[in-house]
Image 1 (cartoon, rainbow, N blue to C red):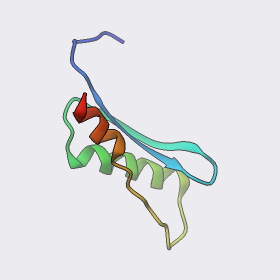
Image 2 (cartoon, rainbow, N blue to C red):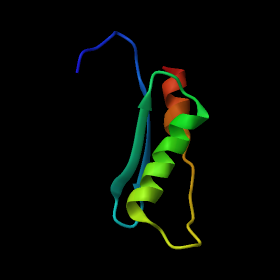
Image 3 (tube, one colour):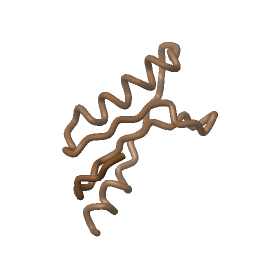
Image 4 (tube, one colour):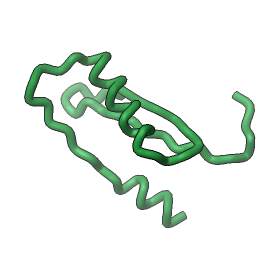
Length: 67
């Protein structure tokens, strides 16, 4: 894939039970839609039952900002 020299942000959703990536989204701008799109993909692919528990882990975003 050609590079424009810009860094892209990546949001991923991981199923902690199966340890599989079940949703992802990539964009050149870190906005709420980035995470929402990844979560929508995960819900669409896995079709979880009511009572889904979601956890946010923002350590990676914080680590990237430090760099």
